[in-house]
Structure formats: structure tokens, C-alpha cells
Image (cartoon, rainbow, N blue to C red; front, side):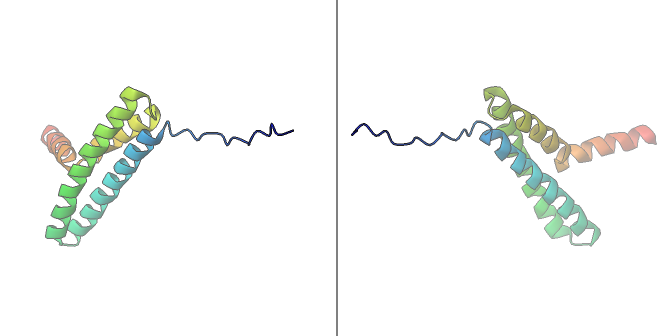
Length: 106
């Protein structure tokens, strides 16, 4: 009766953690971008510009982490969604797309 086996707790799977982290970076990018727009409309251009630069950096990091998640299979769906949001909310790319659309319409 000394053969008591202790209960083993099931291991948690952190398989999707990379994708979730990239999604958090994408959410931060969208938040910073929209906050920068609000500040720019309120004539606070220095703060808006600073947030724009931070949003660019965070979107690049989020895109790269999302790419790692897609390639390694660690949260593939989350990583792909994060990559799309990081591209859409990147201020540099958005400015280029909107500038090109303006030229097409005029």
C-alpha cells in the first residue's frame, strides 16, 4: 500500500502564445495610431508624431512576431490576423495608400 502515485497536473499548452503576443502588438498599434489621429486633430502635433513613430515600431515588431507564429504554427490564426492589422494600422503604409488613392481620384 506504499505505492501511492501522486496526482499529476495536466500540462498547460502555450502553443498559441506567440500568436497571441503578436495580436497584442497589433492591438497596441491600432490603439496608438487612433490615439495619434485624435491628438493630431486636436492640434497636438508633437505628441501625435511621437505616437506615430512608436506605432510604426510596434507594428513592425508585431508583424515579425506574427510571421514567426504563422511559420512555426504557434498560434497561426492569431499571427495572421495580427499581421493584417499591423499592415493596415502602420502609419507609413496607410499614408502611402491614401496618398495613392487621392491621386487616382483627382
